[in-house]
Amino acid sequence: MSGRRRKRNAGIWVAASALVLTSGVQAWGDAPTRSSGIQPKVVTMKNGLKLLLVERHEDPTVAAGMFYDVGAVNDPAGQSGIAHLFEHMLFKGTHIIGTTNYEQEQSHIRKQDELRDQMNTEMDRMRDKKRLGEIDDVLDPAQWSPEYVEMNARYTKMVESHREFVKNNELFNLYTTNGGAGLNAGTMHDLTMYFVQLPANKLELFFWLESDRMVNGVMREFYVERDNVREERRLRTESTPTGKYDEAFEALFWQSHPYGTPVLGWSSEVESITRDDVRKFYQEYYTPNNCILVLVGDFKTENVLALAEQYFARIPKGEVPLRPVITEEPPPIAERRFYAEADTNPRVRMRFHTVAIGHKDEAVLDVIGELLSGKTGRLYKRLVTEEEAALGQPRAGNQGRKYAGYFEISVTVKEDRTPEELEQFVIAELGKLQHGEITDYELEKVKNQVLSSSVRRLQSNFGLMFQLGLFDTWHDWTYINESPERMLAVTADDIHRVMAKYFDPKTRTVAIYRTKEGGGPVEAVDPELAKLLEDVPPEAHGQIKAAIKQMQSSDDIKQLREQSGMMEQALASGQVPEDRQAMLAYFVKIMKTRAEALEASKKESD
Image (cartoon, rainbow, N blue to C red; front, side):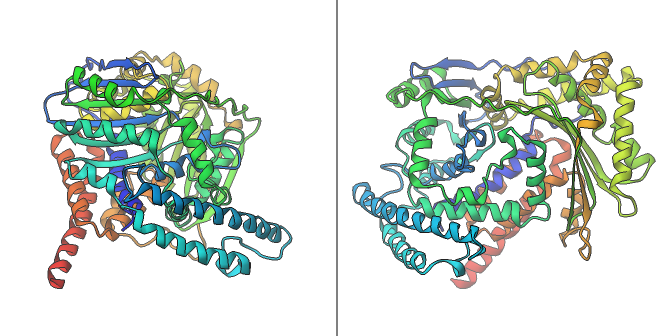
């Protein structure tokens, strides 16, 4: 099993965490009260590394994360996907981690690069042939030139001979054998994060390994890993019923801003990225002054600061000024519409351009989302209860990102109704919200939800670590305290003003999905899962199903047991929002079933 394969199986926890920890989830609670807020210790070292530290001594563990202010928006022109590809590479080790002999290994890597340079030149010739219509696909081995086939065979042998110098999974093993759990990473458009949960007495291990990764990363098995990224794209985008359509919808909505480019990158560009390209990217963005280190858990701040000085102070501040993202999305001048047929239930997605995180109107947009969403929201009452035209819960909400934002409404259509009908119902409800009465009862209900959520989302060490790092990278860590207060101050007049400003039907972007002719409404799935998916945004179905497939195909008993145990602890803690408990419990069942089957098979073979 390769190191990356093991790391991607750890992605089971990321998928579950995303369901459990998303800050936008609101839940009812009894007698909600204001949270006292969070006040981390904030320290910025001389080299620019920022530390956010929250001591909590209830449990002898620490949730630890490294948040780098770089993501897909920073991918250079012609190199889309490089931020995500590099995230993979940082799990391949360093000068001392992941290798049996670094000096001898470097000789092998240099020879590989020399041959890959020749292969890239031949690949360019094949691209010319494609433009002239002589071949159809440069990635199809059956259409490769004889020269490329011969060089690829030599390269494959080089990779095999290089394996004797590679210690797979050493980073993972160092963490897990010392009690670490949940080691993983994630790349978004606006950040890249690396995180793990550790026993409190093993925190120095985190400082050693992460300082080493910041400065000594080796682009080990680079081209093998690039192929793994291509497979990840196939699983997450190309093999899901609506993956490629959702990707096209993003490109339609974001016509100028780099948010329109997928985090995984365009296949043709990812295939052209070289090891040297990734090294340059690493040197530019993975610097102390472009990173936030976040710890939440059982530690003493003075001890952590001493560790930070010992391990990170020696790393110099980045010398290259970081390039700002200056491209802005111009205001839309007309409605944009997107039609697709897929093996899915009919669906309507409607989007409006809004604001970045921290904008003065963001809190109002968040309240609007709450008024429309949920089983007590306006969309459910109209589309499900009154019209009996929608399946599951209609979704509505604002997504403020670092540079810009959007408000999206997503509705799944019942079999005997049409997407166009539901689209008109949605427009009518938006009109009522803009021009009609908003009762004190409605606003009070939303504010109770905000209060309950603001308390709940601070309880988990891992969830708090994630939020502090994300908010401080995108805006400021104080957002975690200020956002609920801003929402509580929203008035009906604020809602009318913001509705008029951002919800112009003439400038919306709409996607209409119809069931593909000859195909079923949905692929055959476990009835229990099908029921759970009714309350999940349709655009997330593909990723959830892909995560479940990974669980069902994993052959790592230890990791299945470890991560199912972590999920059971989260459920037992009472910190999981009620509307997400069933899905998390389903994940636990799938992993435990797979682990039991592997254990039974192992006993039989023994």
